[in-house]
Length: 113
Length: 117
Image (cartoon, rainbow over all chains, first blue to last red; front, side, top):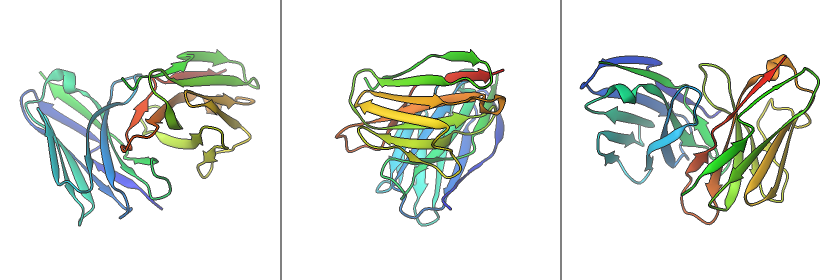
């Protein structure tokens, strides 16, 4: 069935360093790829998204890249800060429904001060 | 804009009772609402997709008679966990997508922590 793989499951970086999280999706019909940040006990917050007709998108310290051929997309956070520490989830839309998401398994990012 | 609320934020109930969770889109009309369950340190698992005025579509393995979903208006969907048991204890999160928008973006509610004793 459709699935989204996400790596790594945990990531520790020093403050100021960059963090990269990678996802691979299986459904070639997926056309929208959002990234969410979730702090403990809170709701997921959309931090950036990308559509299949775009290869890269950037918003300040956050960027997302998409390789449709390889079915890979990645989140890049530069100049990390302690407040970036959270769990990050990638998602891809499913062909089974226009707005249905398949979520990755999550990456716990810890930024060390 | 695009704010989604959930009520209650936390509920503790006895085994065998039913619990209703409300999900509201506060400043927009939601074409579709989604219900997810999230166990500790795990990802969000979609339970069902709900469209206003029609029956919900449940994911494989989710019992529709146990998790009743009603989507009576474009701003309100409810999830009722019937005859709750301890294994139903989880974080339940809803999301909503904008009616008429060209985006697929889902906006999430703050979640409801259900504890079944």
